Image (tube, rainbow, N blue to C red; front, top):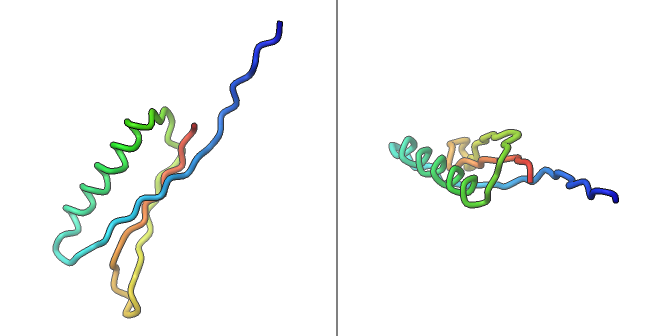
Length: 73
């Protein structure tokens, strides 16, 4: 008998939030909550990486954040 080897794969999920002046801490908490909820609800067992990058408008002002989560499926 041969056992089937369960292959692991990596998946990537992107989360986006708008950033408004004087509300950044609240928005970051909400983004953290959204990502944590996804991890729990999706049964993610191993997070490989999480990174944030800012989006800007034509003046260079930060208007949003993109968080990318790489995880093992």
